[in-house]
Length: 170
Image (tube, rainbow, N blue to C red; front, side, top):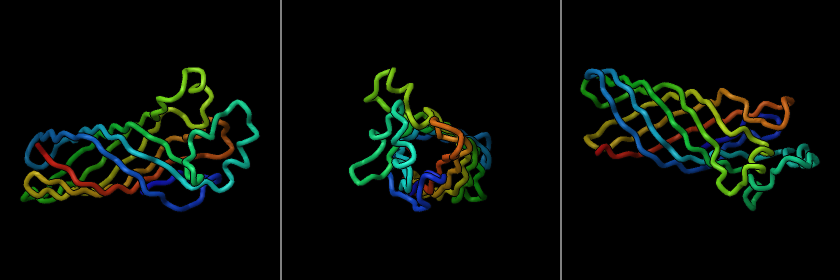
């Protein structure tokens, strides 16, 4: 579940998907790092976004919206998480930064220079992971730290995500 926080967006969360790969690099039995590469959807429910920004002719915003006027952004996210595993190895606590790159492959270089959203994002991530043999079940929260508004500075837009996932350690 995710949302874009700001005056131009409603407070509700929107469902999205994420998929990717991870590595577990342990320093000892308790501490390690977990780098990941994830494709994920970030979006929101605009309130007065189109009304406020439609009049700006050099900003292309229509490509960000699905047919039901829900904002949808695809990101390549790279979290680098510090891991702390409890005794017995059943639970792992994760925390660290996440760097995101906005994917817009259907745009030309000129059009990308006129985007309403900045091309990158930085978030703080914290979560809990259940380790069952090769199976990983996790929940985490991501707080956007960077303003995504590339139009003006009157409204700050930040991403928030609640992620639930299942992974397999090979």
